[in-house]
Length: 146
Ligand SMILES: [Zn+2]
Image 1 (cartoon, protein in one colour):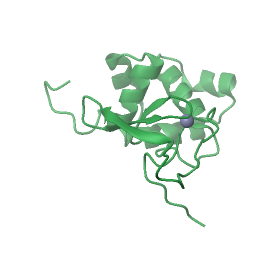
Image 2: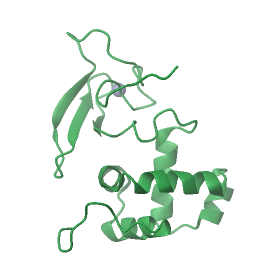
Image 3: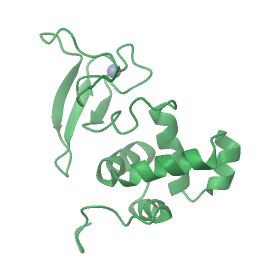
Image 4: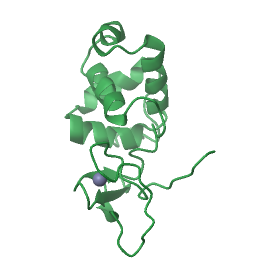
């Protein structure tokens, strides 16, 4: 059965005791709102593990078999210029799998860029190279607005 969870209703950190645990007790929430990013994306903080995350963290790759941090790390390695073929060898994921993550990621560039830049120290130019892989120059990006 499908379970719909809204962003901010669960912690996306796999190391957290409350990972993907929906909040039952609303008077003592484990995830609280914690301001917004530069681009106006809602930011949350898990009070259990202390980790910050944005609205979309944990929802883009939610319920994928592979842990989100593994997907993000693979995307980060790609952004850093590693070839897909070498990543399949090093990480043990199929090329098709990596490409499907990349395609999915390219539909959420704005949110993912935030995470990749902050948590994986990926540079702007590297991100452009990443999206170029799937022929996406970035969504909602206006000239001179980067
Ligand atoms: Zn947590």
